[in-house]
Image 1 (cartoon, rainbow, N blue to C red):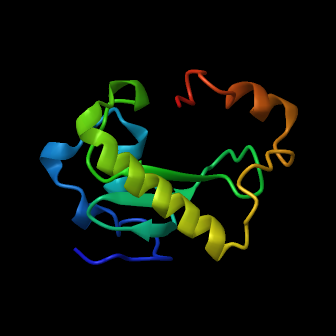
Image 2 (image 1 turned 180 degrees about the vertical axis):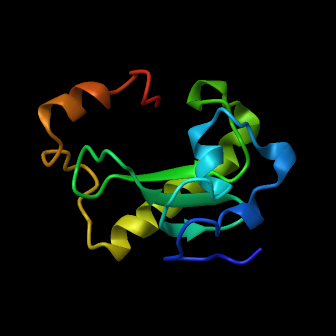
Image 3 (image 1 turned 120 degrees about the vertical axis):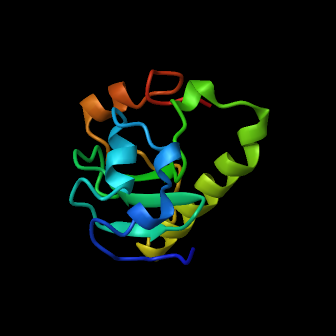
Length: 124
């Protein structure tokens, strides 16, 4: 499966097999093309798109192309997947001229509360 960058909704469906789909998962719905989404990166391992409620000017989501319950369900076998997600996220940020990965000052107060270390949304 080839990477498809900058394509609209539906392009993720070919990369997302039905048996790897959870009909309740918002990310699976996005990858299956059920929601209008512009993919910044899309391959057989990971996909990246902008957050619909961004907490910062460059708030992108990198998700696995196969369903994973949540970040707390990841195990040692997922290390290569997580490394690929980090690599893809950094590539997307570099393409958008974001080079200071430690600068979270552009996040609003509420976003800093929601996306803080070890919260429901963020696991180290």
